[in-house]
Image (cartoon, helix red, strand yellow):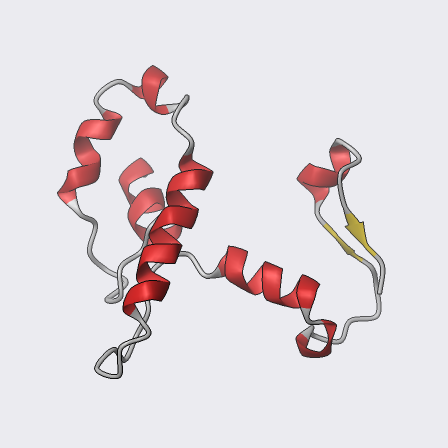
Length: 102
């Protein structure tokens, strides 16, 4: 399950079906793995994939695109989907951090 989460959501490759075995040693000690900064790893992997996607020969881009999409929607309201209710982030809202009214 954890390898599927890493390879399918946090750091997916372009094919969408391969999980690199280089992540396996990171999970040897699950208590230690819980202290890793997985969000930073996700962003670093996304930035690396974005830098590889600028070449004309590149046809796909790997990486978790959700942070990029959220950033784009927040910074460029004209591309946001039109919804009739406020966009909320339940986990962040629990701590009073964010709410985006439309």
